[in-house]
Amino acid sequence: MGWPAAKYLPYAFWRAWFLVMYSSPIWMYFALPDAANPGLQMHYVSTTCFIVISVLLAFFHIRAVGLLSSRVFMVLMGVVAGTGVVLEFGVLALWGSADNGLFWVGAALTGLATAPIAVRAGQIYASVRVGAAVTATLLSDVAAGLIFFFAVGTWPAIGLLLAAGLPLLSALTLAISSVGDDDSAAPEEPVDFTRAPVKPFSYFLVAAFLIGAVAFLQNSLGGSWLDQASIDSGSTLGVSLLIMACFVLTVAFACVQKIRLEALYRPTILMLSACVLFAYLIHFGSPVAMGGTLLVYCLFSSYIWVLMAYLGHGRYFSPIQVFGYGRAVYAGGSLIGGLVGVYLLPSLEATQGIPAIAVAMVGILLLCAVAIRPKDLASILVQDDGEDRVREEGRARVRIEEPASSSSAHGDTESPATPGDVHLSPREMEVYALMRDGRDAAYIADSLCVSRNTAKTHIRNIYGKFGVHTRQEFIDVMQGRAPGQP
Image 1 (cartoon, one colour):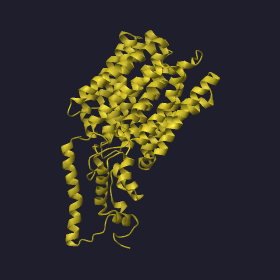
Image 2 (spheres, rainbow, N blue to C red; image 1 turned 135 degrees about the vertical axis):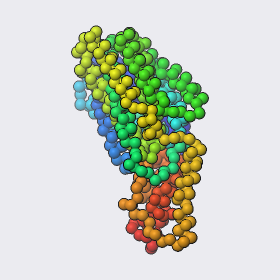
Image 3 (cartoon, one colour; image 1 turned 180 degrees about the vertical axis):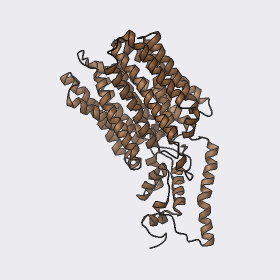
């Protein structure tokens, strides 16, 4: 059975790992005054590998279903990621420099192994209602912030052990997590793929890339022009504000009956733009400004996560595709922003470069806010209304069951459809691949992170599209025989 609440924890531990590795002063435990921050070098290599694996998972999403649903594989990924962290810190402790092949190997392992963990966690979040996803995401940010402060405040050895163990904790909770009957994946109807919202989804990916670039550009510039004490103070304040803000938002969203995610997009970007202006033009170097920017960036990152989880309900894109491509472009933006901020812009004088850079960053953010309209986001979201879902499910069953009774009454012996004649949605293609391998509804539900009722609905829909009514008839069609033929 597993622990139902565990399905929300993988993201919390993965998020905490991200905060500890990239926002805490944990790398300063190995002070290297004459070398670049090893955390930045780790970020470049790890993020590149993360992007590659995320894109591959999204592109081969049908085959990835079985891989991501394997508990052994996910635990192995947690072990590999933790080994990568140990390898990085071990190299720094032994050789005092990140210019070592083993350090790069360790960094690569963290990216290669955390990508499947993040995509699988997103696949699980896409199985619950939007309200539950929002609340779980906010509370995960609270948990991640508390873990951040524990890593910073405890003994260095324990902090390093925590950094190495967080990916494994995330993987273990994935292994024991279970999805109940509260998922809101709507039953599939015949899909007109010519109407798939590819363009709005592309706009969303471009915006996620640009916002990630601005956020990490801001962070890397602060590391270039400010002292470490100011950076650490700003990060600590930002995480503190994040914890408090997430508690407040959790209570606020609990009072809202229906959450319109598209309505939150522009206000969040405007808040981030205001923080960037304050951080660079009004009070450059202030921990308050840096903390505010980190707060809004973290909240926007959480918003992107929830939006992808909600988009994963759609019939045009599967959750693996959404989180694979979505996390890849967001990580790609962070990589580009970090490289530009560390290697290109610090050569400018702070007094001359700061105003131009701040205006450019705000301009990019405002462009993202204007280019994507609320109706564009609404076109790629799924209406998450329980009553509509029940009505649609009833109609779906009628569409499948009525032809069955009609054919038996009139003796209709029309041949069933062949695999080449059937058009399946991305989610149905994943279900179909598992059905073709002989998997039952329970296995399919566990693999796709949906309830058994939803898995059965997908199976019924596929039966209807193939013109069969039982599992044996489906097997006969897959083997090229007429249903019932020996």
